[in-house]
Amino acid sequence: MHEITGGDTEFERELIDTFVASGDKCLREILEALRTSDFDTVGKRAHALKGASANIHAHASPRRVDLEFAARSNSLREIGSLVQEVKESLQAVNAQLRESDEVAIPFALYR
Image 1: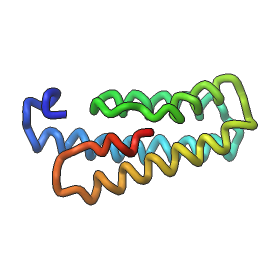
Image 2: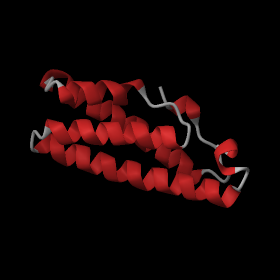
Image 3: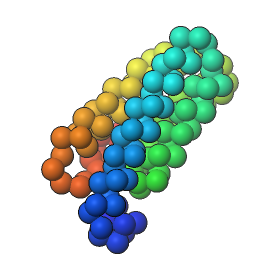
Image 4: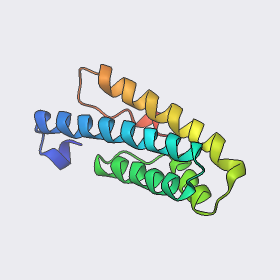
């Protein structure tokens, strides 16, 4: 994170705030798409989460990758549990980021 921002802590905070906001939005869109069986949107939003993680050099959760592929192949059997795992992981990361006084990405939460 420090390399991308050149050590600018204000910019780091902006990146983190953007990551949290976009992650929350993607998660809401995934849950809504799941309710309507819109697996194309589930896959696109899972891909967006993966991209947001890459933007801050956090390792994308393998479950996000699994969700993206399950949604794109309409693997309904797997999607529900994968969405729940991604939701829990993202919420844990976002909660830690929101509470953190330091500008640090909790990589351990990205399974």
